[in-house]
Length: 379
Image 1 (cartoon, rainbow, N blue to C red):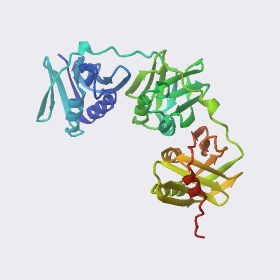
Image 2: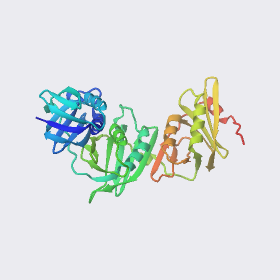
Image 3: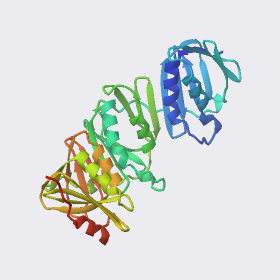
Image 4: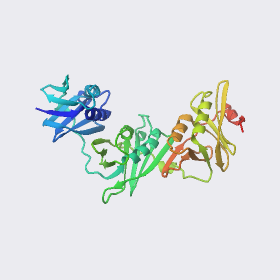
């Protein structure tokens, strides 16, 4: 008979983490369950949907080892109702599992554990990366990842590792974001690359743990995994060819503008009031950045301070893309490298190894008129 006792706080955190890999519409009923693998003073709680696996291991007072498959939705809901310091005892009664916490008692149906799919084995780690470095890089890269399910080659983050550098890149065809961080390869580690699903990397960006925690990185022929402390996240790789993003991403040149992030974001919001869509126009010259938008019978023009080096430039950008590029920086000032109007803008901060490219949109005649209208700036 399987029986164990855990604290409510540990159970809640483990169930919530494992549920990140539980599908909302499972193709098989057992995939709606969380697998409880009970043995040797611990319980491993796992969610799996054939593509992504999330496992959290917690300490337990184990009376009888075994494997149980419980509805993830019910387990998470139950754990939330128990005081964090309380203890919960689970007992397999055959067909159901009884959970007791103080004077509260639940009887939860068990799913057929023998029907649960086998979990992927990723093999030995290929190296280690700091959790904080990975989260920071993903915060900058993920906004540019494609959400278009008809383009599977873009529905992931390209991971490239060579020497002690790991580069992550994502694109949706209209922008590219790439961030480089340090990592420690395993002994004799060879260069490798992989395309990891965006959903898996999004879950990794939300994982807890300290910034200094080392995550073990695994990459087999078809799978990718991250393991740190008591948490494991793994999934299948995308076996499509990712675009050759390095050939598209230009290197910083001698034509650039140094701008203040918050004033420009405010100017963009002011201009969007008159926009018909999410497009804004930027006229960048020695006087600063003039931001404009136009719609049927309406126009808006605002202004933000900036220091220009090189020739002026007028360009139309998607405001959401521009917002993502600017807010991904920790610095109050951001350097934007400028190219000809038919080429992209390259956003660069003081953060080494981070680049964010945004493709311009086509301007209409009304929008050109709006951007050419002067704006009075108070002294």
